Length: 126
Figure 1 (cartoon, rainbow, N blue to C red):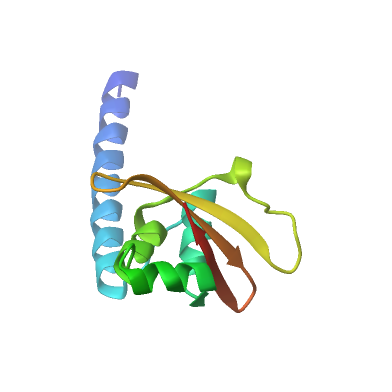
Figure 2 (figure 1 turned 30 degrees about the vertical axis):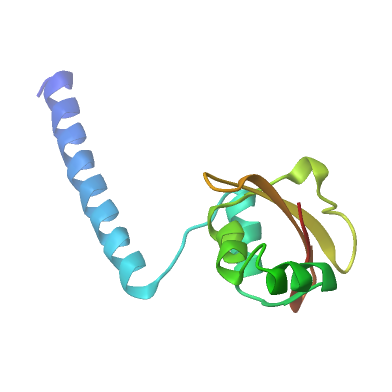
């Protein structure tokens, strides 16, 4: 059997295997709600979404006056990008992260979050 024939069989089998694995894992993720977060941005946001959260006095006043609401704050944790350059990721036990989110209505906004082991505190919206 020539090399090209063996290579074509290998590529054919590999492509069938890849399609099967992708199909299997997509269905598994949809059923269980599993997320595969390998990048730092996704891992930090997933960690914050899993914790209880509280608001600072400044954010509470903004919510009371109608400037922002809890749904727009939750959008930071699903669609935002962590600005690692301006975040304090080395402090212990609580780290401070800046999350940037852009919307058509409000433009670019920055959320400052203090991430402690059990809880997060939403400190400021700029």
